Amino acid sequence: MKLQSRLGIWMDNANAYYTEFTEATMVTHAISSAYGHEQKAATLSHGEFTMHNKEQQMQTAYYRNIAAIIVKFTDVVLFGPTTAKVELFNILKADAKFDKVNIEYANADKMNEAHQHQFIKKYFKTN
Image (cartoon, rainbow, N blue to C red; front, side, top):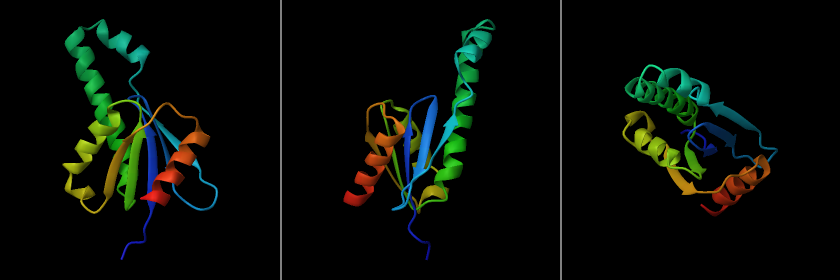
């Protein structure tokens, strides 16, 4: 039987901050999307289709990096201000690798690290 491990991820379309829920000191790590303003400007010069294609490729890579972390946990909450959490949730639910991972999402405002930790503690203590 796999030990229960819990993960909270605050995310938007550009950055994800993931923190494992523990009773001890929690540490937050970051993952960033490689698609930024510089990439958008560079690809836009080649046309709008190329820009959207590149954006989609980089967003997929960003979600894949987050998914590689999530698969190691039993309970995960995705939270943040944008629809990125819902997009990732839908991708993960469609993948059989994540059938044994309990994944939920919640709306949240922009938060600093301390607020993220408070949100994760409160969420897992009440759920």
